[in-house]
Length: 365
Image 1 (cartoon, rainbow, N blue to C red):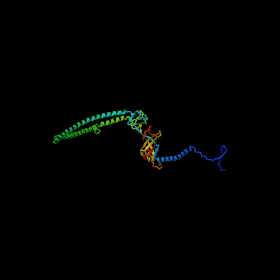
Image 2 (cartoon, rainbow, N blue to C red):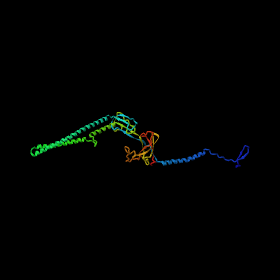
Image 3 (cartoon, rainbow, N blue to C red):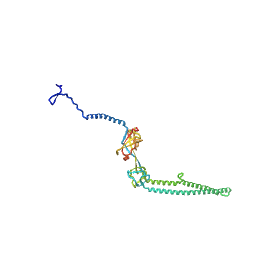
Image 4 (tube, helix red, strand yellow):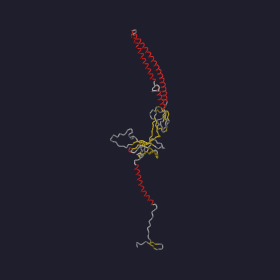
């Protein structure tokens, strides 16, 4: 029969019917683990994508970055206040100096001679004052003499006038007596003017000083000469690093007011970052900043926004752009932002180093 049970031949030659039960093979031991891993991947990948999308959604526009930035430092142009020949140079290029250190010396001999001349002028002024004091005494004596002459001339005139009235003298004698009175009065006026002039010349130039004006003028010249002598020694006005010393050569003539070298103030650097105008909407003073430097890979410093520029870079250029023509093309402007460095660096922050700046605008945004 077609539907008969299959027969199985045994060892003894008997044929026995048996029900055949299909056996299902058990799954391999790692199949269940792979299945859970697949499910985990299917669930985690969308979650990860959603998390990344949420992060960019929440932080979008929060960080404003630019690589158009560089380190800035204060620089002082050192120029002598007096001109002369350089006789001593105490510094070299990139040498660190302290405030008060001698940088170079100008030949002091001409200025020392000027001090001696000023001292001689003071002595001359004092002699002149003594002479004028003597003249004052002489002027007083001349006044007394003129007064006596007037008295005598007036008495003579009175006698001649009385005699003229009685007819005992001549008209000529009366006129001579009158002329003598007028001459005596003129001498008195001259003596008084001379005395007043001598008194003024002996007077002090500054009220209450008690020093004659001529002596004060000479002393002022002496003070100026001494100040110029001191200025022949040029000192560092601040701690820093000396730069551009090529003009400092012994024997060179250095004019006053012309920069002879530069002093970089290295202890207070900052970063000047030029942001696009479209990045300034949420930027505020005080916001935290992360700084990276091309010269020092891996170095990160912290900072904060110290100030935002009052104008774009083009406004402060030597020739600002004039857009009053038909070919005007709108260009995104950049505004300088000053970044204060608040973390101490173990590497030298050299002026001009390129910097990457990232401003977190959330805290004050």
